[in-house]
Length: 296
Image (tube, rainbow, N blue to C red):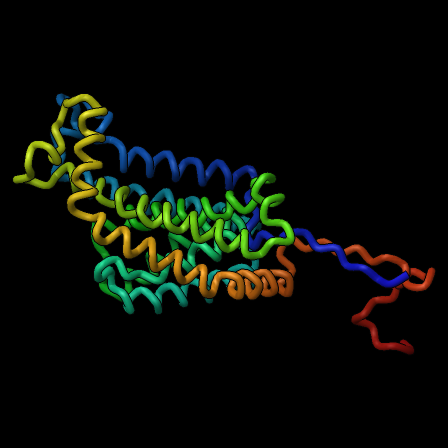
């Protein structure tokens, strides 16, 4: 009987109970930061301080992200996962200046989505936040918008990892690598457009001199403001969002299969969440320590 090695799908950063709670807390704060214009009453302090609310959230969201990263670091990350995180973050940071957001040409989203899909939701969440922060330092893109970019990118990376672990998706893509690539490309199309729409929320409520049909109206019903936000996004940012989505999906279709293979091979060699079962060889179990030289 030949020896057999059984390996589970690797997750570089496992999500434990505390990590799930920390991610949930960060996501709740992020949702509040993005959605409060639709929920706040006109007489509330948030609306009354509309000019400084983005800066308040810009300080709050990074603090929560620090808590999340601390929870990951509390026994969930080791030197190997940190090294892989550093490599992919460096790749994204190096790629971001190539597009600099011109006409939505941003190749970083293909790397982020493939990383999250291959290495798990926890890794995708951390990769999204860390890589956007690092790339902002390189490109000079530090400002009140950065925390919103970080949490949105973290959600995109985490979403890719969660999709990969849905049983129906696993059955659909099992032994069909091109189905997997098409699925990831489709997710990239939606995620890249959603990112652009979501990022509009950090400044749209405070933009002045807009036409009434696309302007935020404090105290108006949430449905009306949501409709105005969607119209604003279509008019102002869709021309950037569609090229971003098409580029991300195109890069994944071209290189996604090879990148997924490389990332999974790297995760297996790093032994993230690795389980090995040694079956008997020719009826005799191999109980020797491979690190011990023969004859000792």
